[in-house]
Image (cartoon, rainbow, N blue to C red):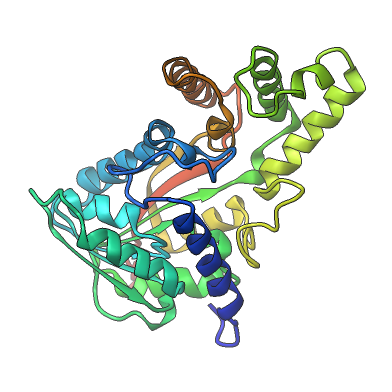
Length: 324
């Protein structure tokens, strides 16, 4: 980040965010998560939904790290938040350092680590409150999980990551590409939510009666959904933080590809992260619906029927080329 960039408002936003969640009963551990009514539409509402989304992310991280890096890696998790991904990496035998500018998030991460009952095969894990610009040392891999799009200066950040990595070091990220998402994609979400509402399985019980027989209202709802996903917030929400979506997916990819050799690029989910938590009903039926819409999301993205809202990238340091 640039030297004059003020991190205080960003840190304060995430401090408030984690405090509100913890006060509502949120447990930042995907293996010990509990149902939390605080989340009205997010996957964090139910452990089953968390596994479908965050569990998938962790599986992809571990697969990529294992295939391209190996085992027992020294990993820096930048912007680790409450630490739930750092914790899973360490549980898989890696040696992880998690850093974040939010003091409250790191406090929560440390509390969760202290009570961790899953110790077999555990590598190591430590957390620190600090900006990425102040980190020192060498790491086998650096993870940015939903972090790069918050940064005002991608170039300095990616160059800093390059400096911290050895010649065979890896950079790994999962970042949004909301600019790719179309109104055609929003139409799928509008259809699913309306059908769920009409059958009583969506939290907005009156949605179906408003949209199913009026084209203008349905069109307006599609546009509302498109805005919701592109901005990652509902109209009444303030947004995640002051610098959310400071960089889009194409800008992030261009910067990563400038400094690192792309090893793998993989499209992520299209819509479930703002849909699963809105399901309502008995657990057995709701979880079957959640499984199906997750399958539908993955199938549609993989076959080009829907555009993704996020992507995975893993790259290796570019080898210096000398000409005689």
